[in-house]
Length: 114
Image 1 (cartoon, one colour):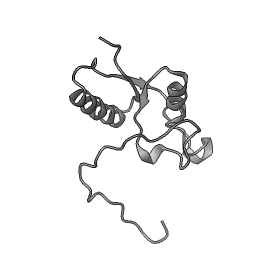
Image 2 (cartoon, helix red, strand yellow; image 1 turned 30 degrees about the vertical axis):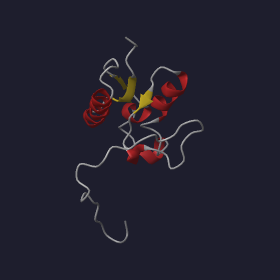
Image 3 (cartoon, one colour; image 1 turned 45 degrees about the vertical axis):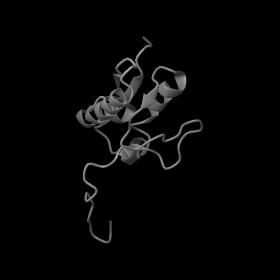
């Protein structure tokens, strides 16, 4: 049996649920592979929640360390919330898939000044 795929993600409850969905989907699609393993990781954004995000660097604060681990081979894939990702991906990384939304009617409605 091969070693399990290592799925890197933040350690927040939401991130762990999302990574679990990816793990379960991979396991159901590839039952002969070893069950994927979730690797919770702490990011700069997790460590610095006492300051405004714009003050400490804005986007990428919740993804940077995970992407570095991916490039270094410490994990095999990463699970992120798209809202946390930079508009432009770092060189060598791609969005390989996006799971379908549970409810496509989810929306943000706000004032025009938003």
